[in-house]
Length: 93
Image (tube, rainbow, N blue to C red; front, side, top):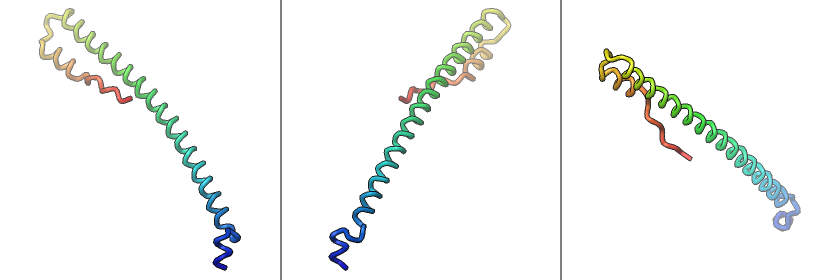
């Protein structure tokens, strides 16, 4: 019986080869899915970064216009408004 197993008569080699192909197929599918998810996350991150940049600029413009329109505002309040706007995050691509 030992020689029959070595020659592949028991189907062990065929089964192992099929399992290896199935594993390769599963790995390729996972890699494809992961790449697609990563690309979608990159697009979302870029869109969010653009939105944050737009909001940051709008808040800065609003703070500057408030300084011009009202001489009663204290500089500390304008600094407080600017300090509440988070700095732009680094680009991670």
